[in-house]
Length: 266
Image 1 (cartoon, rainbow, N blue to C red):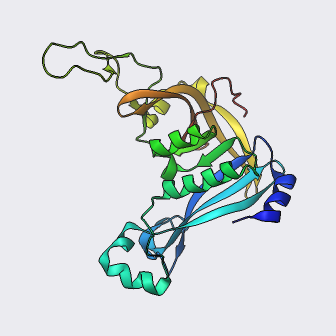
Image 2: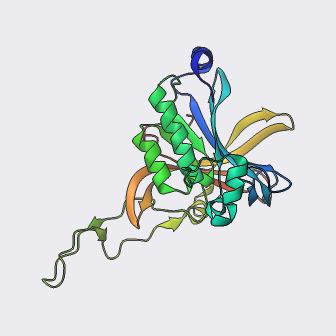
């Protein structure tokens, strides 16, 4: 983790108000069982479940540069059973260690950076390992940051905000207090279904970068929508659809809580 003079130097050299905090989990293949946190788990570097360690990392990027900020080691839940206690002793894992999900570890790092106030940034980006967790996204928003989070294809949204109301009390049982969808209102749809329903003119090609393997281009579509929380409409969000250019384009979908007036180019 960057501290002290290194933070001050980095902050002066590369941070900008519209900078980006990048949250990412990654795995490290390992042979054997002696390393702390080692287990059979998903390893993004290999693209499959394999024996290894995992961690969550926070990095900073702006138009002026980029740097690693912080990291957390992830302990799988199986490490908290009685069988692994001897490994805890050998690996010097503190006895007061508690299980924390990867989104929880990422939020710890984010809050630390925000509270320190030495690194300026508006945006937080992450993949679907974090984006699929509504509580994580709401926590990022509560810190007054804009997220750009990849979502799994089974994420459900509304194009428009449906009408909700507290049901009329029938004079029997408990008086209703929670709002529900008004009968006849549509159910939220999967984001891949929403993408398939977009007209051709909604898609626009955009240059992403000039890479070592040539120009990287994808098609994008930007729409406003309404997120779902506990089956009810919640925050208004940007839905960013991305698909490759080719015969079988891969679809990726991102959500952002950036304001409605945010330019598409941003």
